[in-house]
Length: 381
Image (tube, rainbow, N blue to C red; front, side):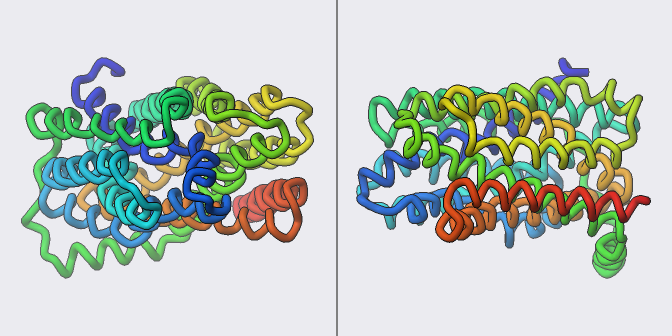
């Protein structure tokens, strides 16, 4: 399965979509120093990138249902590449924020479109396995990009912004090689939106949306955005060390994602979701108390393992619940709420950080993970 040509192209889309955050998180302290701005202001490079997805991801999903997956993917990949590469040449922080916002528009549909295409191509346990492979590839990229970004930043904070140029060959592969189902244009517009509305009323779908938001809030707030500042302040870590520690998150994700097919034969999706939130809580709780910079790799690996279990199971449950002709729209709305978590995570963590300090902020985030565990367990009992 992992050698399927279409799946390999989807993996390229996955790797493109995640580079927009994971490759630049190690440079946030350098950007803060270069422009003489606060860590909270530097974290806006994450916020403005993820914010367009909150509003535009469902729009792209509807367009993909109506006009086909490929006709949406090629333009957005091209925009991602142009705006992202242009960040390398900017001379002001305001211009950098504008270009990051444009790059975020290009990235808005990528995380949902890859899952949609996998759900189109595979069914049953093969779908879960394929989504697990995609999660493993995402983890591999998330492992490499922080380390690559941190290493490139040793030559200057601008250099990681050359990576988005990789979106151009990916767009060409999608245009020439990707085989996706043809859009169903026979469905009445009103009937299509009635179906989407009916799916959105489903308790299961709403629950999955909430879990997606919470997962990426926990990932982007305490881990990807503020862990670099914690490492610099507490241990004096440089961008390369920060990148390597952040990359270790993906080791756990890679392992659990690759094993997801076997895990799904033993545990139900809900059981795996419950386990993931316990792991989130434990990992976040110990981060501020680790004695050395390198020891932070331990909770980072655990956190990554939880993501490798959590995210594909959410996607599988959504794909099983909705009809194929509405799949891109619903999975894109899931991408929207996921982006909401990405966007609010740094803001909420910044608030906790300002009022409770580093230790208190991580304890509060761990408590949030435990509350979600308790709520989900009560719902399914």
